[in-house]
Image (tube, rainbow over all chains, first blue to last red; front, side, top):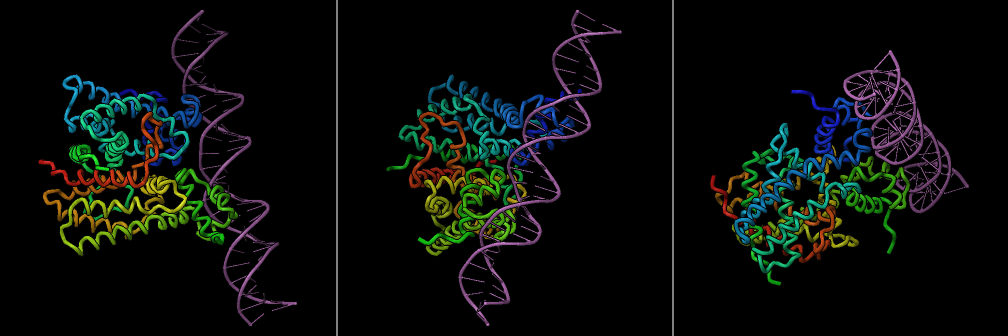
Length: 209
Length: 209
DNA sequence: GTTTGATTCATACGTTCGTTTCATTCAAAC
DNA sequence: GTTTGAATGAAACGAACGTATGAATCAAAC
């Protein structure tokens, strides 16, 4: 295999380190060292550290968003009222699937997504684009159709819940290792657990207020 | 009201800034400036920035853990097999209740908890103590009793799900503001939504493998 | 009034950070 | 062979960081 160009190697190294230590916890020097590139290469290829992070986020999030979009298209082409479980799977499934090789069971990607969405850095707000918003809104509309009686606010809450469960799924590496709590879970099992868990949660009757 | 002592003012300022900008995104200088204290006061009263963060985390997490513990005690004193909804409420409820004054509807506390648990910094692993682990294990045992048929692994997954939903509940401030997605939700409504959502999720039948 | 111990203060140290500069390399175009 | 423009390399810049130091302050004890 031909060694990839410097730009790609920097992207790979940055993805790895950003996932492991966060945005602020990763220095440009550490990235270029891991990538075997020169310190100035980040500035040359990406402009700045923030733009590098944006490129990393795009590369990770874009295929997920595309898969979510395609899944919804396929679902709605069959019926305008798909079962909740299939909507959940179409939305949450890609978050488990998109795991680049070398990723230890997706835990690194999961952590990177948590980083992207929970990083308090000011730049983080620009790491994802309008494509993600639009697919979220499409799912919102689909869920609203099959879950009548839910107020928009409560539905948004539940959709954020989907996101929280899938993204923070492997967050327990950050906690004290509880005895009996085996740390990394096989990707496929976690996927089925999440779908089960979330389908039941989404299908809950709305609260009577 | 008498102005609190320097130590408390530093704790307040640190809690505010850590929640807003994360651990690495907050400088000791910013904390002491907001607290109206001298730069060296952090070193004097806490030893280091990391120990200050540990003190902040303790002050926020301890009452939550205590409330979770007391809630479980009260529940188990009544019956060894409480309904799932009440277990969920006893576990997740305190995460909504413990909101210090001046906190904008708990969103800041929520973000601080996310910071504590998702921060990739090395020191973050020491921010919570064994008390949190022990209460988690007690709830695990209680849930295992009323949810037979769930494997330990899947139950741990679901408990992490509870945590994810309650803690990341207000994470959407980090995303692009979606139209129609009203940002901050009244604490009481979010609490009821979360209990409903999570009770249904926890009660889902285990996956057949 | 003096002493004492706790606290606050201004300041500086050494490190690391993101970024910039400018020289150098190198393959392709002419 | 020369030129050209993209890419890389070594080095340095200024700023911000956490932390340490030692003098100044102040209330209480004696």
